[in-house]
Image 1 (tube, helix red, strand yellow):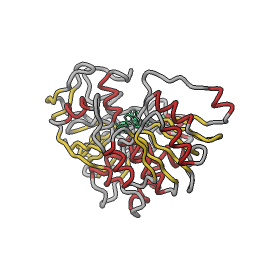
Image 2 (tube, rainbow, N blue to C red; image 1 turned 180 degrees about the vertical axis):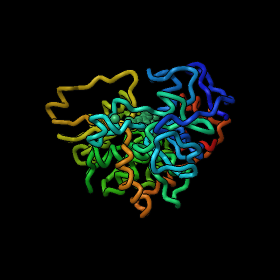
Image 3 (cartoon, protein in one colour; image 1 turned 45 degrees about the vertical axis):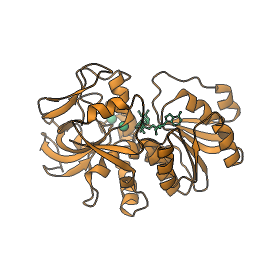
Image 4 (cartoon, helix red, strand yellow; image 1 turned 90 degrees about the vertical axis):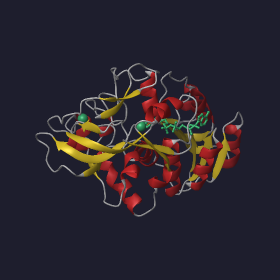
Length: 340
Ligand SMILES: NC(=O)c1ccc[n+]([C@@H]2O[C@H](COP(=O)([O-])OP(=O)(O)OC[C@H]3O[C@@H](n4cnc5c(N)ncnc54)[C@H](O)[C@@H]3O)[C@@H](O)[C@H]2O)c1
Ligand SMILES: [Zn+2]
Ligand SMILES: [Zn+2]
């Protein structure tokens, strides 16, 4: 099969013929119909993820058709249309038994722990725990985003941030994660302020429900405090940037909640005194377990959430290495989907 192979960190990957994966016991192999280009793939390519072993195939935000079923898998057949949370959880550990699959210590992530979905086929472990059946009316391109960024933002905004109607919510960084968060928070009735450096991304944010958009600058915190009458209830770092974290914490009102979704490979300096004195909450959020998908899928089915609208570009496997490398300098507005 063809796959995008990283031979060295930070060096342009190449599309190569590699062996097709076999399903493990309890697992399946999918024919990848669509897979998203997420900034986490870029972090992996840059060498920010200690789990990756080279050579490596990235890709973790995916939807496809089951092509092979491993021994011991119940309820799934060749031809079924599915997606999966990128965090493939074991289903039997203490965290999984409590429903917290997103922090399963035995989790395996395609495109990080083993070869991922920038390929014609991808293997998925623990199929009965993680596979999510796609409604017939949900196309593969849209469903791919539900494997990582849209679902991650859904859990961050709804379950971790507990965003409520009429709250002021500021989303810093309006790429795949951030635009999803704008759409989800707006659908929950929040008053959303979107911040980005790219005017095109801000235009999209407005069309997905942002009440205000701000071109990122040194005045961003003051502008947010003015717009919100003293600070936001909730902020989200949807890029992964020390500067954004500092601005986000300053832009919160007392007892505000900060959602950290963007990865921070170089760490961050926190003003812990401010966290204590203002009773601010710093909330990490990681993916979303498969059992939480029905609520999100229902909101998609009823048209309250429209993840299809986030897709601005579809590319081929051959175009993927350049698109991945380009994330070092720019981010095209909206979500990019790869059709292998
Ligand atoms: N926690 C999780 O489970 C999880 C899941 C998915 C992605 N992530 C991480 O989330 C982050 C975002 O991923 P993505 O794919 O949406 O990224 P992206 O590249 O699509 O979007 C980033 C956005 O930030 C904007 N930006 C750049 N500099 C800015 C600045 N100074 N101020 C405001 N905006 C700025 C860019 O213009 C772009 O629109 C990444 O770190 C990714 O690894 C985490
Ligand atoms: Zn991702
Ligand atoms: Zn587990």
